[in-house]
Length: 108
Image (cartoon, rainbow, N blue to C red; front, side, top):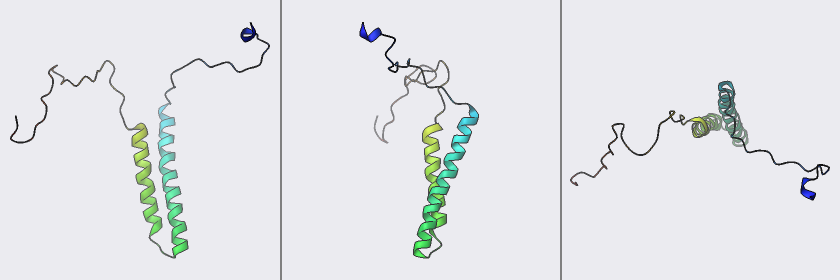
């Protein structure tokens, strides 16, 4: 059979594996790198605007904007805690009862 011929030099498909979790140091370096690059990129854009418009307001605004966006990205990427082993999210309270739906004032 032609598809089983080992002389053909086509890449073989890789087996499906779960993505590996990085170590704590890798995560820390990624967070720090995101924060520094956010400040550098947006602060640099603010510096360019300040040079172009002959002002002094855009560098601090750019740095604050860069930190804000970097914090958002870090929280979006690494913010959620992994679920506890054996925990299920089925909408029930720890006692096993379903929590009562919240109603507006005056309604039952």
